[in-house]
Image (cartoon, rainbow, N blue to C red; front, side):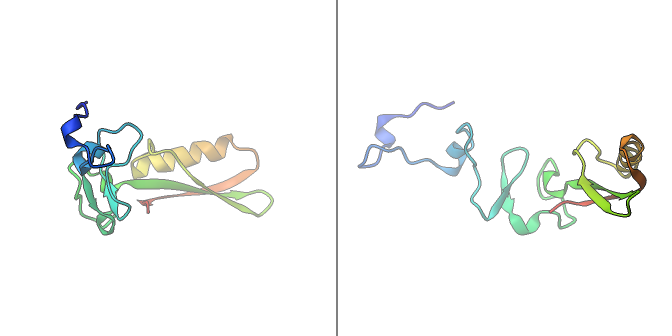
Length: 117
């Protein structure tokens, strides 16, 4: 991590931080509110997220999520967003099936693997 030097301070004694410097601040956010921070720390406009085009080098702007819908024996339904580890159609389907089988009162299930917003 780069040390703060006195020559970069403004009149109040506060160092001006560039966008690049903000990425190195632990716990800080390196992108403005109207931008998405990619997994590698780079920033893209929010409108590029889940648009079907991988704009981040690591494709983190095109993540998909798995949602399970359980039909319960009492007639109600329960939706649940699953961990990102269930990151393929098959893993989503298998995970929802297993979760329903292990849940008390789950009569049936559906799985949807789609872009998360």
